[in-house]
Amino acid sequence: MPGTLQNAYDLLYSALGPQAWWPGDSPFEVMVGAILVQNTSWRNVARTIDLLKEAGLLDPSRLYAAPVAELEELLRPVGYFRIKTKRLRNMLRLIVEDFGGSVERLLELDTETLRETLLAVSGVGPETADSIVLYAAHKPSFVVDTYTHRIFARHGWIDYGAGYYEIKDYCESELPRDVPLYNEFHALLVHVGHHWCKRVPRCTECPLQPLLPETGIAEPL
Image (cartoon, rainbow, N blue to C red; front, side, top):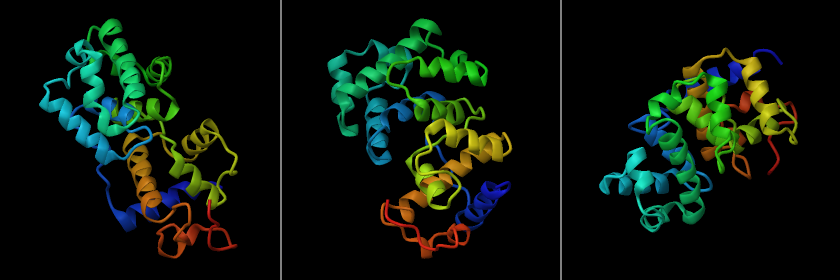
């Protein structure tokens, strides 16, 4: 269905405008947020990042040197704080031990090498890696999340059983390889997922309603 995703983007951007996503004052803050946001709300992540800033630890080397117990306590607001402490420390180990503590050196890798390097870190999955590549490194790698899958499946653009890479390949084959476009589209899809394309959808109010299949309102999912 050539042009479908571009039509969807145009509808959303016209209706909702720019989303200014991903929130973060630096590439490193974006990376930390990408690890911490797994299975929690951004509000909890923002609170935790503020705690790290107040503790003077929002720096790769200082954060890596922090005692594990202290880091776990700071990460409590995001839930699963012991697991996330391990995952964050795995990322910090990469930055500090392999790249001399320089986030810039890591993010200067070409897109595919950076993505594979991140995926080799224990606890970093495709969505987290793509978020870092796109939002921290500003390189074109489309981010797929639960909302993307739900919205696309309900509109008939993918099968309900489609996996991460099938959806990612579909997006990257249908859209120009453009960082601002990938950035904005992902953020717009998150907005749709939060407000309309919930488990029980509110299709009549959604900007993407004109692109629904002829069957009409989407079923609960």
